[in-house]
Image (cartoon, rainbow, N blue to C red):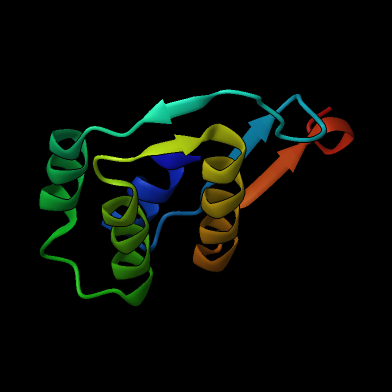
Length: 95
C-alpha cells in the first residue's frame, strides 16, 4: 500500500488497485522507520501541490525515526489509500 500511495501521490491521474489475499491486514511486529528513507520518498514528491500528496508525506514524516507497529502502519496507509481513491481488494474480493 505504501508503493500504491507513493505512485498515486506522484501521478494523481493513475487508477491503482492493490490486491491482497489476506482478508485482514494483521501483523504483530513493528518497524523502525529510518529518517533517510522518509527523506528520500518525500524529496521525490516535494514538487507536488496535491493535498493527498501532502497528507501522505505528512504521515511518513510523522513516522520518521520512530518505531511503529505494522498494524498501525497498515491501518493508516489503508485510510490514506482510500482517501486517494486507491482500490484495495482483500480476501474474497481478491479472489
